[in-house]
Length: 488
Image: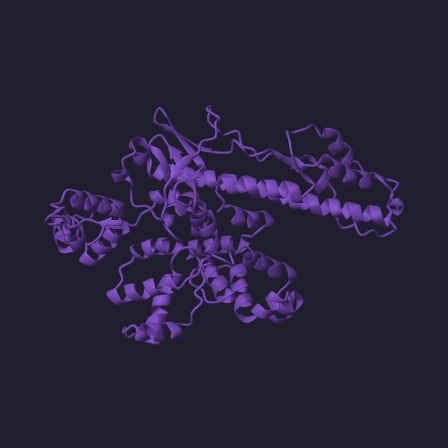
């Protein structure tokens, strides 16, 4: 009980900073899209610039001094600001990690992918033990999900559609099937409204004070939240400003279009890709590198920090209104630049930690390149190794690629569900798929193996799997039924 209370207290202390909000939005971006995002920020924020470090000791030393001539009796709109935040060494950052291989050429690879958003959801259904009717209903629901990840049709309408097609289904059965689909990745998929989408995502978070308040705000005060009536929410919930801010930051970190990230980062057939990670085997020791060769160094523009420094050295009454407006503008842009830089730095750290955990978990594969040696691994396994949330691991693994000495692999290829042999040994479902493919490749094409016969073959090898599951795996491999494989 004491351990549980300690964990809950730790969760209550967690705060979602502005930098973390930036990370949530950036974690899903592959390398090329991140480069575009950085270039966009360089254009939009004049306080952010590209370049090498420079010596700003003079700025720091002068900023540390106090101006004794300032008239302390006159109020200024800047009195409550901590100017040291804008003039010390911490205003100069580097986002460029010196962690690229000696061969510094940017590599791109041809990667063929025919999967759609719906097919990705179908593949997740293949990992769930469903009845035939549940499978039929969930697939029908997925077929009605749009590119943003929303289900735009009412349950009653879908029930009527199925009835017209000769399929009898009740509203309760349809709602139960919808719940199954809403448990798939990404969080928020198959929501019917924005409100439901946000609640589905919040339900995936570990419970703490800010999450509980965020749920309450979305559930009971969604209209006030949408209209930014924050004072009204604060009064009705009897919470202070800090509690409100924490909850709002949690909501703002959610994805209002859960399907859009998948759609924008998915690849067309034969599209060139740039790997996000480079895995090098150095005499049995693995080195995980971020492919940051084209990432620029970022820093705060010295003219903006100089403007803040000038204010600190000036008398307040001598600052004109135009000058005050310029100083506030500089403060705003420096804040945004700092947050952006920190977000990228933390993103890189999160990516590296996650990829290192994957390499550690799947060490045998990275040593040999034999996919049969891939261990069963789910998002929770890597979350436990890194200490990150499962949702964070999901974002990192989405649309990212790793270059190894055996080829380029999507990170999702390293994840698989656990299966058990009759001996109790745990194996990856990829092993089952491999055996199925090998058995079908070696079959007599005049008498191809039916799913029933494949079930017998697997059972003889110690894999007790239902025929229905075999059919799902076969479909996932793109292999037709036996009668369609038959040749003369």
